[in-house]
Amino acid sequence: MEFKVFQKELELQSRGWIPTFHDVSKEIMEIVKASGIQNGTVCIASHHTTCSVMIQECSHDVDTFDLEYLQHDLLDIMRKLIPDYTDEGDYRHPGPIHAQFGRYVKEPGNYTSMNTDGHLRSVFFGRSETMTIKDGVLDGGEFAHIYFIDWDHVRARHRQLNVTVMGTTDAVEDRKWNNGEVINTLRKFTEEETAYDPRFDLQQKR
Image (tube, rainbow, N blue to C red; front, side, top):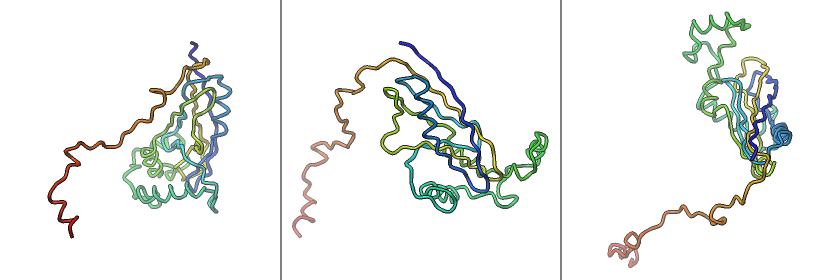
């Protein structure tokens, strides 16, 4: 059985002024197909600390901010948990040393370090997702789309998304565990837990 690794990088342009949601589903599926891997996994990972990867349903409807409704609902929730950085001092970060570091690495201004909200939101979401490949096809279910989220909205940014496909070019055996028997994880009560108790009569004999 041959094991193979296939890597590609996606180059993206975020708009700034509001978080950007990039739908990269088409590109990820094309990369999986080009890899030749039939069975394995694909890891979709952000190159940046203010960005996340999300697998979610496509909401179809788009508002005047060019966000799908579900994306804007998500952003509304994140703004309640982690408010936008709008005024100096909203957060402890960035401190004076970090601001100086930004100037040292040629950032265009101190304002570019005022992206604490983006850093904290990416911590909540994580920077990567891993999906299964079955018989050469990405297994995303019926509705899954893959989104690269740039939470950093202080300016328009060039971004990179790393894609690593790993697996075998061979077919696999039957995937069904225990012949596909449905696993019942519901609580099972004992006879003692369901036994008659005289105190029930207060309810039953009103």
